[in-house]
Length: 348
Image (cartoon, rainbow, N blue to C red):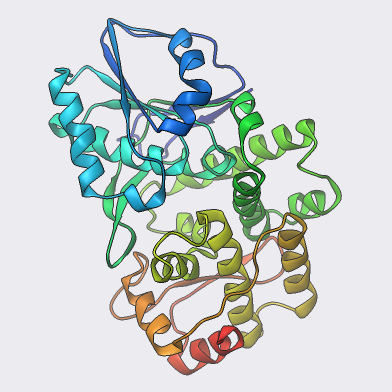
């Protein structure tokens, strides 16, 4: 199963997302695989048997969002230099979204840019993070504020890697699936309400659907100057939550689930969304044990953190808000009073 990403702006090379088609990868150059101890212990031997290269190295970095920083980036780059990777070498991201973001960022800056491949091992990475070329790291001001757009040469989504995924990680990935349906496809949302993703055939169908949606969006708007921003539904709120909780309380998808409910609350305040649709979204999230509430301690502080969001411009906060399920509004003219009123519903 394949999904092709054909960029409308032909400055960027098209590439393919392969779903359950990874058998052998051959390279006539050096390759370095970036992974973490958890993934490597589970699947390292399998991936090494898949890859044939002139020379192949493993770069194992600590597991977790809190390591998504310059220190880890420097470690990856130092290992690349120690093993004398050159401009024709290839980096392979083998892990979840954190691995993909950091590996891609390193590929974009190592010797001014080398090729890389995504082999995502989490549901969240397969349906969202691995596709589209966003790379980056976090800092004290927020999530993914330092990074680049650097497209992979290919993406391989293998369902076999999801078999060892903890239930909590699985649910975090489902949040991104629901996000896609709420903003872009009402029929898909209805299908999700009536088909369990714990059934393997349904899960594969959902992965293909999400990859196709994201491929279409990214092909139209690679650098997030328009419609691609819609993929950030829930994320403006989620990134503040993650930063407030120091990336230790919630997985990214869990924070996105809460963020979607916060976005829905704002949409309700504005009269964009009806109570019934907001309840349907919350029920679907909770059906996969995703959190939908958050004890917000300081409304003013939370509001001010929005201005660090990458979509904000000219002192305006851009929000992606659902209307009816399957449609969206992009709003950058919402008053502080209205935003804070919606946040009060989450005030501890």
